[in-house]
Image (cartoon, rainbow, N blue to C red; front, side, top):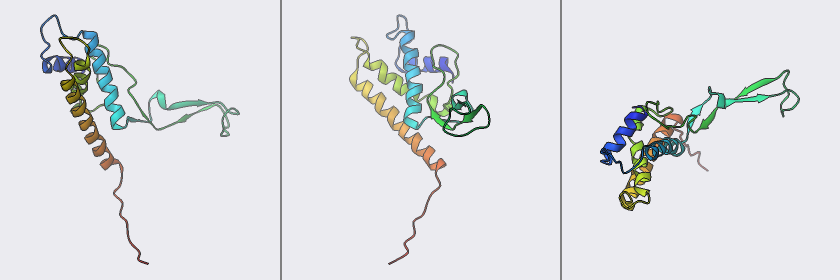
Length: 158
């Protein structure tokens, strides 16, 4: 799913398909961008060691370490999205397709929090946040199972 698919799925889920919309396009794109960012925050970020965000320029003589010449240090980092969802036909980067549909829960949380007589619904907002946070916790736990080797503890006696 790309950003247009996410936009359409959100409008369908909240039954906001007829003009004038309850939520403006700018609102929906802002909700999508925040959901994208929040998913990565709650699941531990994107493991990255190849983007420009991982390159740190180091000048010989100015760094703590001694280098023979000017160079770059490559880091492995956990980061938030490099690009913001702000319009149609954008790829939802850094998140596997299976998770895209769950971004709608956070979008609903934000949408129903909007202080407007037609859209404000604190129960629906809380439910969206709860569902999203629960899903993110499951994803984070699943990722941890794959990342960390199971250890064993042995008792050696007295």
